[in-house]
Length: 134
Image 1 (cartoon, rainbow, N blue to C red):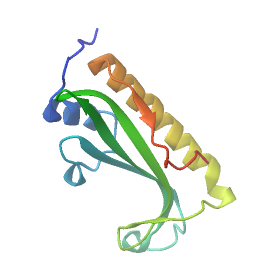
Image 2 (tube, rainbow, N blue to C red; image 1 turned 30 degrees about the vertical axis):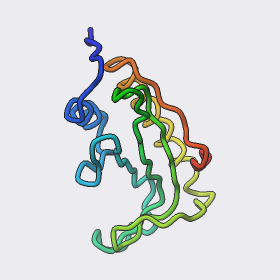
Image 3 (tube, helix red, strand yellow; image 1 turned 45 degrees about the vertical axis):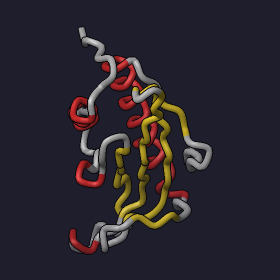
């Protein structure tokens, strides 16, 4: 049984978010703002690894603080191309990659929701500018 932690610290959140899997970009995250991404589908697997690009998604998770206590989180998803320079570009996902991108996004959302709810009794909602699921 998981113990619920009231008012989680940045480091407790990092530990829990890290356990979800390879999605967390820890070095690009800070207290109250966490970056996640997923390289779902390789554009051309015949290229050498350092030249590969991927279709996928990235998400910024921001804490909603009231009276200096995290009350919930807002998730802002974007989808597009992770280029060979290591940067995300907002682009339309090709039809051939949409199913896999949607699957990885959905699995991540379930894991994130479970961790936030079970460990911290927190919820998250989608930001109004969040990209729709593919």
